[in-house]
Length: 455
Ligand SMILES: C[S@@+](CC[C@H](N)C(=O)[O-])C[C@H]1O[C@@H](n2cnc3c(N)ncnc32)[C@H](O)[C@@H]1O
Image (cartoon, rainbow, N blue to C red; front, side):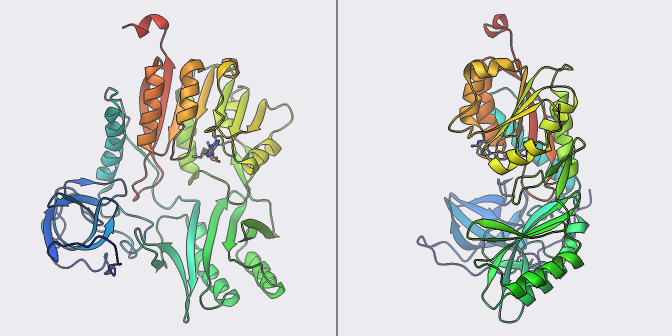
């Protein structure tokens, strides 16, 4: 492999100098230090140590020696800024986006895709073995390429001169004014410029908020946040914007409530051919291709049968509808009442889907209620599903499939299931977040026969 050009020069393009912020603990070491980078941290920063103190270094890769200056205290260590890369890694590549560095949207564009995939796969193996489980079989990464993200949350701020619209820096409140973004789907990115123009018209200096964009199958849904209700003049401008941009829906979020200001078409997402109406701000898998990969990996871990399935943390039914389409009766549970209402409303007459709104952390499905199912799928948020996994450990069905966006909590929950007699099968890694440090996985568990437990 040919190493990229030497970067002993200052790397200002990607690391516009951050101003050190005051912190209680002061750095007492030298202004500049040279350190070897030993690993990548959970946020995609290079990890190093100086005098035993951890350093977290954006734009630094394992194997590199970098010269850095300390910027700020962070957690148990220090955030540092690269002044020069002394011996660039062969896995270093030129980032494709001019916003890489200041923009917090991507943290790994400087790492060769194959090395990103290997790192993500290794995150899963490390998390599982750290819990004392054997090294799992982890399939090669299913990578969803950039340009497929169908949702994003942009920050915006009106300064005296202009509207800034983009993503916040990784470790700062600084807003990068984004004029290109290879990560999001082009049908979403095309809205950035007209959104900026809209915000120029309807906001005043000092205003700030978010624009939450989702590309549904019937067009874009946009929710703007501002801490005051829209005036009549603003409503008219919003209606014109929705028309010009051909939005499906435009909402306004203030005081914790979303008002649907304009709805030109119902914003719906097809789940196994069933259109489900997207509630404002509801969870949706970040790409259609990623959702399909998850569904395929879940299906592959279930027996070919029509046994009843329990879909826990079901959201709007990404997994529910495909399982029902196979002839299974599916019971879908989620704490988000809007998501469950959307899922229920989409169920066709005779479709064998039932639903419940339930907090599965404080009130997991357990005991005899689990005996009605041949299989359980659970897909919790990053915190994982400790209470639900404990309930499954005692009374779970023969087949369990876990979908997870955080290897550490997955491994904790997996350990609970394995200790109760489940065997962990192959793990599929799905990368819906190229250039970011997120890792997603699907794993199957089979209850081992009682005789095998004494082995
Ligand atoms: C990663 S999403 C998965 C949603 C769905 N399975 C999908 O693929 O679209 C996690 C879901 O967990 C739900 N959730 C979060 N905390 C919960 C809790 N304590 N009890 C039940 N559901 C919860 C969220 O509302 C969200 O729908």
